[in-house]
Image (tube, rainbow, N blue to C red; front, side):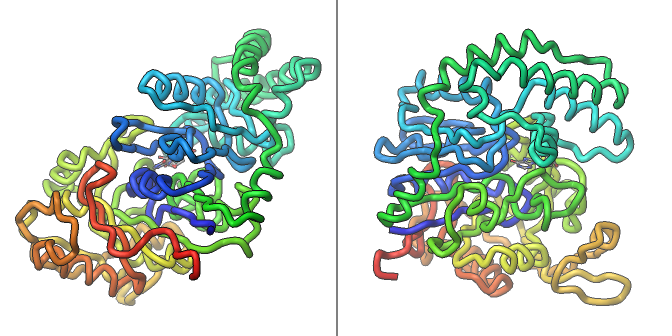
Length: 432
Ligand code: IMP
């Protein structure tokens, strides 16, 4: 049928889990292409409420095959825990395939993540400390271990010994008092390997066959475009490519097979960790939105920084990804406000900017230019048609659409799969 990507248009936590869960109902394949258990997708559907970190959201659709692709950094212990939790809630994880090319997050990556953050002292990135950055650094240095290595018991031990020795040297160099024990790692990962073995395979032929037969393939984005390693607010970014192009690369899908990109945006901004957030609300309104929307990290529990919707960065992420449609999430969190602000441009040293500066110091100095819209002061929960929304909420959505120049096809009005307004089918029609 088609290849659809769901990608975060802001700094992650936009509500992608809900959009992916909706699309996954009709997906033959759901592929996780990048990132690791630093991601946290919250899904609320008829099977319950779940915080997924690694398992693709297609797990709730018994007809869908889930793939963890080569672009992912996978912590086996976390994956197994997550699978156990799902099984305990009656969700089968039988249709999960793991690429043998996928990088393995090792215990020393977690120790190194902390050591590197401590070394940055006054200027930490604010990572999730899940070892994701160090795992991708090893991949780029060509010293990473892959799931395929885990399958080969004869060579695994020697590879771990070498890798642990290297990591321990780094821990010493970066002043960490912690060390990794190679024997313990070999032992623990042998146990993980026994359970993961049946799922590990070369997923490339599976993906190629799915593309060839026009299957409905959903690429599940993690994090958000402004956290992308190349295009985000470097260095306050994650270590993978979170854009549409990054998802295609991580999954091994030819760009020619691609059909549609859906950008997910929240009706306001949030960010966890350091880096510019020009519309940040350091006042009672920010605290109110954080509490009402429970804006605390699904992975780390950290309080998220909150700000108004920023169309300057959104324009940038739309240009980068070429989104065909947007999903505008969590509008109901603004239901009680007297007025709502939208950042339409930045002002920097007397100049008006429509796109964010690439230089982070300049970005941090930008002053948002706001448009203030009246609030709707009534609940939007339960609305299923656009025209049923309060007039002020309709104006808000229309203004966002005009600022982004991308149609909003989905409006999120609550955590449940069914809560929201689907204005246009999310999957392209077979003829389009
Ligand atoms: P790392 O990915 O753990 O290395 O963290 C790098 C930056 O990305 C930090 O600012 C994290 O808070 C942020 N980050 C990583 N994953 C997510 C996510 O899924 N949602 C939001 N922020 C994230």
